Length: 288
Ligand code: FAD
Image 1 (cartoon, rainbow, N blue to C red):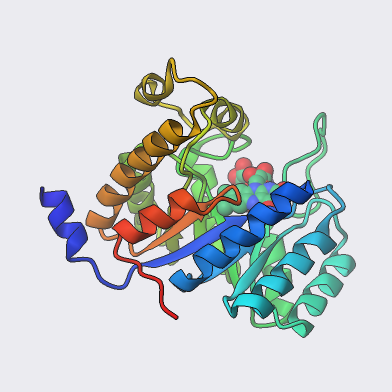
Image 2 (cartoon, protein in one colour):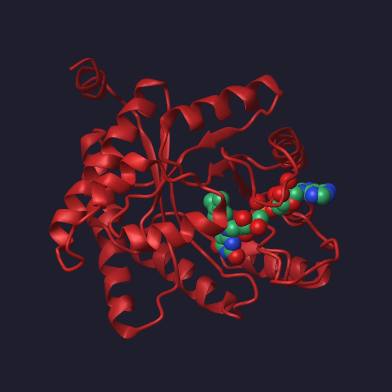
C-alpha cells in the first residue's frame, strides 16, 4: 500500500526508450509501431543501438533521423569506438551533428572474441573526442554488477568517474533485477564523487531463455525467484509471460521510484506493450 501510495503521488518522471535496428521486414513493422505508440509519452529521448563491428552504423543513423522527423522526439544513436579510428569517429560525430543529432550514447563496444591486446580507445576516450567535436549530450554505460572485464567493482567505478570527468552527462545502467543492487551502486557512485545522473536500465522480461543468454555474457545475476516465476510456462503462451514480465518490472520500478529515481530507461526490445504499461503505472501519460 505504501508503495502504491507513493507511486500515485509521483510527479515529473522522465523516461527513455531503447530500440535496435530490426533484421526482418516483420520486425521493421513492429519497431515503427512501437515508436509511434511510445512517442506520445514524450520520452526524454529514444536511443538506437549499433552493434560494434556489425557494419550497420548507417542503419542506426537512418532510424534515428526518421524517429526525429516522424515524432519530434530527440533520438540518440549508440556509437562504439572499438571498431573505428579516431579520424573516422570525428567524421561520424560531425555528420551526426550536421544532421541535427544532439545526443549520443557513447560506448566502447565488446572486444572481438579472442582479443588479447589492449584496445586503442575506451569509452572515456570517445566521450573526450565527442566533446571536442560539438556540444553533444552524452550518455555512457554503467554496470551495477561490474563490467565483465573489470578486475573489481572499484576499478569499474573509477572508469565511470573518468567518463563523467571526460564530459558525459548521464549514465544508463546495465539491466538488473534486484533494486538494492542498483541503489547500492548509486550510493557508491555518489560517495566516489561521480556527478552523473545514473539512470536505471529496465529490461521487461518476456522470454526467460533469451534473458539467460543475455545475462550470461553481461555478468548480470539472475535471481532464483525469477527462474521460478517463468519455470514451467508454455513457450507459446506469450500473454501470460507478458503479464509476468510486466509485474516483475513494475515491482522493481516501484521500489526505485520510491527511492527517488526520476528517470527510467527501457530496453524495449522494439516492443511497446510492457514499457507502455509500466510508464502508465508511473503516471507518465500520453500527450497530443
Ligand atoms: P568502457 O567504459 O570503456 O569499459 C570497458 C571495460 O574496460 C570495463 O571493464 C572498464 O572497467 C575497463 N577499462 C576502462 N578504461 C580502462 C583502462 N584505461 N585500462 C584498462 N581497463 C579499462 N554494445 C554495442 O556494441 N552496441 C550498443 O549499442 C551497445 N549499447 C549499450 C547500451 C548500454 C546502456 C550498455 C550498458 C551497454 C551497451 N553495449 C553496447 C555494450 C558495451 O559496448 C559493452 O558492455 C562493452 O564491453 C563495454 O562498453 P563501455 O562503453 O562500458 O566500455
